[in-house]
Amino acid sequence: MYSLLSELTDLVLTFIECDRKGNENKFRIPSKYKLVSKDSKVEVARDSARSLLFKGGMAQDYSKLNEVTEETEDSFMFEAFDGFLKVVNFVLLPSPFPLKYYEKCCISSTILTEVVDEMSVNLQLLNELFEPILKYDKFVRDLLSISNEVYGPGGRNITEDLRTHISRSDYFIHVENLDRESYEREFCRYCQYDHCLCHFGRTATSGDEKPDFKLVEINLGAASVSYHSGQTCKVHDKVLTTSIIDLHESDKEKTDKLVSEKKTLHMNNDPDRSFTLPISESHKAYLNKYTPIFGQKRVCVFLITKDNLHNYYDTYFISNDLYEKYDTHVRTVCGHQMIDWLKRKMLFLASDWEYNPDGTVRFTDYSCYGSKLKPGRLVLNLDPQSNNFESLNTSKACFEISTLYYRDFFDAEQMVTDDRVYVRKFLEYSDCVKIPSAPIQLVNTKRAQMYFSNPKHIDELLSSYNKRVKGVKRNKGLSDLVKGTSMLQVDPSLESSVEVVNDAIKNPHKYVLKANREAGSGCLFGKDITLKLKESMNDKEELSQYVLMKKISVPSQPGLFVKHLKNGSFEVFGYHSLTELGIYHYALYDGNECKVNEANGYLARTKPEFATGGGVSAGFSYVNSILFF
Image (cartoon, rainbow, N blue to C red; front, side, top):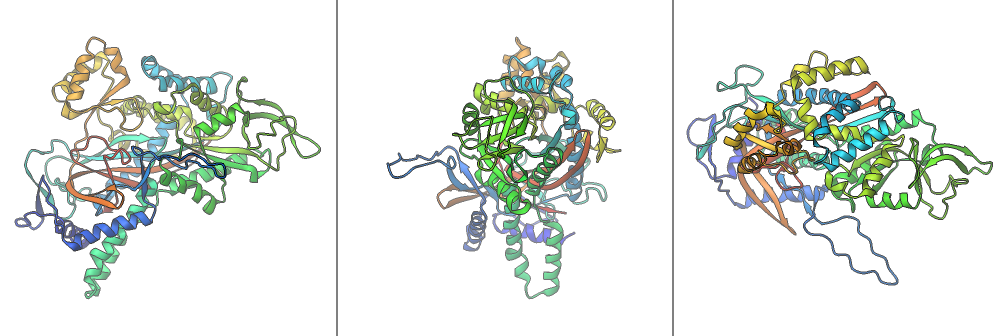
């Protein structure tokens, strides 16, 4: 076993008051952690927080909004982002994780992309799947209406479009029948799990149950926190060097061994590439497919963020890296900006045009706000004084948009008004590469993911995919791997689900009731599940907007959590922790040909065992990095 793992455990235990006597391969920690506050321990935490701060590991606290003072006659004011900036919450020390699980999760994720792509091009399937919930779910109703209008009969042929997937698939390790009743828990000295996973994939596991990994969900839009994940990995790399390896400086052989192990176990994590590379390649694919109206230098990418640039630090790196690494111009835009441009006819769809002798462009067929929409190039004219479609000056303020990368419009709260729904539909009509498209957003919902969690449906979708798609294929002989990641998920409104619903009423701690929303929004746990299921017995149809899922049983590890309170103050606390592994992956399609389908980088989100949700920005989880053993 690697020396670095036992050294890491020794370091963890120096922060916690606990009994280290007994089995040398195990250690015990009470459920109520008491931390050691020696100067040396505080310094490790302080240095890590400062390091993450200086690397831009920042987030926004939306509960504290900025107050902008009034403009004076000789100045102007603006809001660049909402909320107060704070250091993102993180785990003080990295956690061990089985390498073979990671490798299998990477493979599974690329196959899931194939499942998603097949669902997204099948409008009939999507209509049948969502019909029962349309009267309850405006968000799905709007997205489905957009999809049918744009890609239905006489519309765009989605199987001929350029399509790009940027996703993150989230997994938990699953062990049946874990005992969580004891006050004091015993952990393995090497892998740090309370259910030892040291020999997984090599020999038998300890205990009778075979560990597995299960899919929590796949995020097909706004798959965030990649920047913070990469920076946290760098912070942990420094801690491993300064707090473990450097302490053995007098023993060169030991030092060299630890350095080598760190390089092997604490792999460089660069998930940002799963965003910037596919966006850049999408831009190139667009330029190869379409001759630009105004020339290649007047074609750009739209990075569509929430108003006032929520998640600033997690999105700005995209525009910065695309320009610096790939020479791709990005315009960061918000929903309210695009609504304003549309109403002023500065943003429009060009279907046909010709060039005037003076070099200006005359648009002979176009769609703009208030007119009948039809497919076309998305054009932005930033000169509001020049909106003559007979003669637009190409050299000044006109841009053609190649790619739309959404970090907005992915939740019901972001498509409430008619204007925002119209913008989403307008953009969907364009020739741009949409990341994601409206049909892919529909597959991002809990109801769609319930559908493809059924092994029978996975087989059907992959069979259809293999007949339709040429090029790169990941599922050959590996469909069982994806099917093995599924947990029981049912529509609680159906008669076929009665037995599962009754069990959930009696044992709500074994289930989660998931609303058909983005990420963990609207999920119910514990007694709230029982109350919701019981009160809906007389109107079961209303339950169709939920998915009832069996809970994943996750082995725990000791966790040291660093929480930014306010200004420069932090809190460090300990608790038994659960780590969710997110795999970033991307795929590019030119019609029915898959050009690339790769996994690259990870997000480790670790949360205290008592936390119900999983989001970092929501305050449930803490960003972590992994030692792959």
